[in-house]
Length: 336
Image (cartoon, rainbow, N blue to C red; front, side):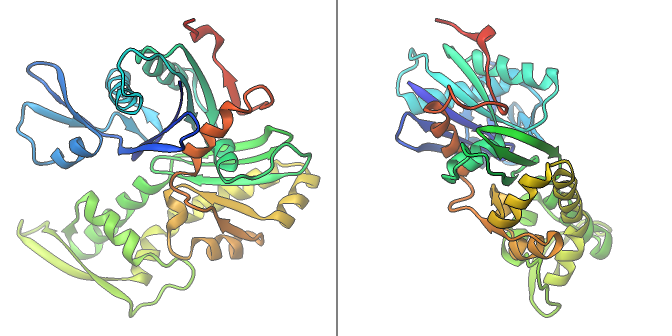
């Protein structure tokens, strides 16, 4: 059995054989601290957050694209693989999507978590490469293609040609950082503390990066910092843009630096074919137009950008003998 895993900060998406996406669950695990047993994973664990008794710990073991607790991550992956496989004794081959630039410690944590599931072989593929494969972009020709994957914890940029990554960069600014920026902005301006789920909902509903208006508003509710009581305020598109501007500017600068490091011939190809946007961040209102204006290159959103990377892992199984830089066979972690 072949299982592809998009190990995201916000969600873990699994593909199985050629069936496509079979699981899309929040990267959350709940366990009983008294018995040290897993209580729930994914959506069920997410529902417990902030509502469980003190002896039930609800954890996000993946932070900013990096595994912060390899044991909990291994348990989370194991439970989801069992659900997808339908049998706890099957030892699948696994391809895991990872950020473009990993330290040895981060790489080891991912491999240890994957192998703890009993998998017989593990491969790693960089997220932008998987995203282009999932969007059915031809990467086997000597033509430069550029992908920008904006996930929950990291934004990954890569230029791909001839089945390999030419240049790549990773930035730990993405969906979760956007939420934190919104929370900080409202707290500083209105002295109201928002929850993470509220900030995310406001981001989805109100965001307009290209042409923000001051008269387009939504009501946001939280807790007044001074009085400790429920409070609310009106937030406009222009204010939300102000809250996110620094983060979006950092992403634009990273893309610009990646283009500066890319050979001129491939930059010419990117000018012709444009930049592909994937991940949940690609759904931000006005992002395509904003990036096109800032970079002078057309940008387009992939079809179903949320599952694009996961679908690319399924494609990678059939191309593992031709993929070059950006795809790693972890031979030291085989269990035949």
